[in-house]
Image (cartoon, rainbow, N blue to C red; front, side, top):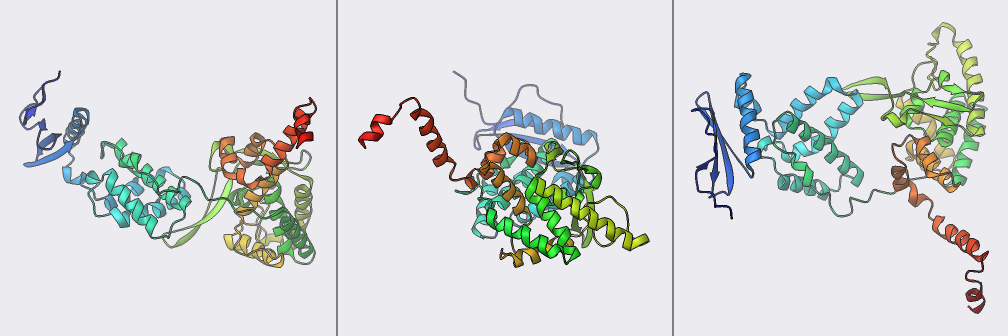
Length: 408
């Protein structure tokens, strides 16, 4: 039986004077870690000896490097600012912007708290408070917490925190279930494509938008992947495209900037076989674009882009969305329908056509088929009934259930 620790009991291996100490405090039922620097004493209380030793080693390194304790006395808001500053050169601009926006609500709730005093229960209260505002959808709150997790995990790596307090935070009841994705019914998709084509015979902007919508529905590509697609990525003979880049505009520090880079994940770099209607749309759009290029002469900037403005350069978000929304309105589809909904619609149609989920996952660029099924399973609600009919028919061939069915 282990002997109880005594109040003020110092751990074996006493350190030299001024080098700090680890003492068990019975009154708190915690280990007290302390150290002096520049005449000031620093105290921290932790649950385990291992945590205590880790903190003391961290302080030793800071002393050796000439660092002051007050340099690490960040508030949560100060730390997030510092973290974003350090992180910025190592990540894509759009990722930086996402981190900045998604951590801001937590800074509003927790910003004045000392980083070292941030605990799981304080974080949990902040999550609950943000949830009660009703401003954030489940997916948004989940993304916010994810960004904050990354920030605090870096604090652990940089030895500003002993452990990440986000680890045990729970999202409110119901947040584990993602919202069901929005899709456009197949008959409305067909109507949208037909209207876009008809308008494309009269309006240049509509023809390009028809090709973009056709490709989005036929391939399930993301908004940024469509914007970054090059003609050199299109193989008309094999009827396939290679997705290897994405493009986007973002606003940072009051300035709108263009960014082009690789797709979001390694699995997003992929080849996609296209249906005939998408290939046909690209062929017609290609011909129309070449005619526009000849008329523009030296004003045209040849960047090999599939979807361009009148000068051959990248389309702005407004340049993509304005004609898209006009066509939505003409098809009787709500103009608030995001372009990303076409990706969801494509996935839904593929699954309804019984294309294997592994194939659909590959087409969409998901890292795992389980992700695809988790997101889109609800879009094929008739699957179970149809499967049971097929199952019954299969077993009936061997006489299973025939007598029972006759007696019902």
